[in-house]
Every structure is written in C-alpha cells, then in structure tokens.
Length: 381
Image: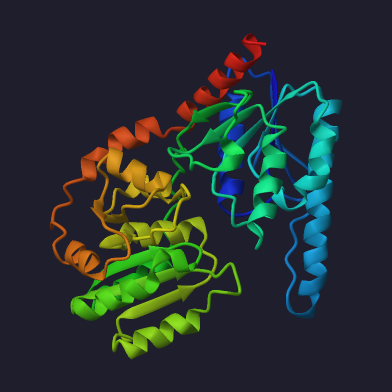
C-alpha cells in the first residue's frame, strides 16, 4: 500500500509528529511507499518529504493583514494540492496530520468522490472554539468528519456532536502519541538554570507555548508561599491575547519578581532538553478547561522528571494517571498545588513507571494501530 501524510506546517509539534510517523510507516513491510506532504522548503531532513504545499509564512507589523488572506488562501489550496498528488500517485491512504478547518466548507467537496481512504489524527480533538461562533466551529469540523474513514485520537475523545458517527461509517481508534528522541542539551541553557540554583533555589518549570491554560498566575502565587523555589517560564507566545509583561507585573505584585524567571523565545530541541533535564519539578498544572493531549509527556519521557499534573479531562492527564508518572493534583487549586510542590518526595517514586509508558507510546505501536484500523476498514468493505 501507499501512504501519504498531510502536514501543512514546517515547524512545531505537528510537524515533528509527521516526520516520526512518516519514518515509521516507511519501515513497515506492507507499505510500498510513504510520502510526507510538507510546505515548500519544509521537511528537508525527512527522506519521505514531498514539499508540494504552500509555504507557512509568518507576517509582522502592517503585513499581518496580508498574512490573514495568505493563510486563508493556503488553507484552501493545500488540501486540493494534496488531493491531486494522492490521485496522481495512486495513494491508498491519506492521513490528515494537520487539517484546514477554516476553509473546510469549500475544499471538502472535492473529497466526496475518491478512490482512496482518508484518516485524521485528532491531536486537539475539541474543535468547538475554532471560530468565535460555536455553530460555525461545529459545522466546519463536521465537514471534515464527513470525508473521514478513520479517526485516531490520543487517549480520550470528548463527547462532541461531530464525533457522533451515528451510521458507524468511521472507525475510531485510540493511539499513543509516540516518544520523541531527546536532543543533546544546550550548554547555555544549562548554565542559565545553574545560576538560578546557585542561589539555593529549586527550579520548577513550565515549558512550551505560552497560553493561559497553563495557570502561570497560580504557579507564581505558589512561589510566593514557598520560599526555596524559583519558577522558570520558558517558551513563546502564540496569540496576541497572551502578554508576558502581564505575568511579570503579577510576579512583582506578589513580591517574587526575583524568583520568577522568563525565557521568552521559541525553544529548540536542545534548549527543551536542558530545561527538562535540569528542572527539579516540571509543572503540567493546566486549568480545568484543557482537553488536548499535548505531546509533552512524550518529550519528557527520556528524562523521567519529577512531575505535577492537574486532574483534567485530557489525554495527557489520563496517561499520567494510568501509568503513575506524576503527582496528580486538583486543577485550579492554589493550596493543592503548594502542597504538591512542598511535599514532593526527595526520591522520585514514579521514576520507574516511565518504562511501561515508553513501551506503550512507541511510534511502532502508534503506526501498528493505524495500520490495523486501515486493514479492518478495507477488509469489511
């Protein structure tokens, strides 16, 4: 069989995910050829890459207005380019690792009649807030699900209208996220954290894209109640709604500006490895509203850190609880968070549990489940 993986970004989590499953698919005996469909000049280090999609350009300043039109245009054109490529190369299965929800009202009609199967990977399964108007979000996502034969999700799938599948046409399968190989540590980032520790402080870190769901203000308040810890917030903003200066001012208002550190930048793999390796505790203390999977557990796996995770309805919390990887804490509860940090055992009691998690979460297991679902689909037709 031939497989194509659609990934319309050339950086970030979905991009890295696409590279990993493309490599794993290409090693399967039943897969004759695997293509990874990336934007122009993307996926250079991926042998399976076909850079046939429009570039995912970013625009700043006055050009941001043009950038919005460009985004809409590429969101319409890219799925059509993928369709043309799949037809021409006689691909059997097209996997949407990313999907263009904003223009789904238009491009999905092209996929109504096809002689290949389609699959979707629901990294962020709750799509109801994609547009400001709920009905638009639901209808646009329903358009995508109408052309999907297989749907893969990470650990949990929310009960949403576009997943009802009343005619049982779609095969839904739970898949692991996959374990990312750890990059070598970055010496400059290690030195940065070492200087914090030289002050006699334990480093608690929150890493990744800066967004309100990560409960930075509660974490800052926890620092104010625990005198021997420092908080490292590392990552970059992805929306204009997030203002790092607001968090800095909040730290000042709590009197802990000297113990809250900001490393505001896009973190490469080496920098992330340095933070995970050198943090005394890693916080995944997300708010109750967080429902995504998040691949961060899989990036943390090689380092087996002390971990605090909030009990939310997310795939991440489900995995952390099932495999006993972390102290699980009630979300949005300052006292519970403070207690978890203060009373974390000196010797990590969860460190050996990462072995079973890593075995389940391998990329081979991920792709094995996908192929099994595909074989079930074609054999039942």
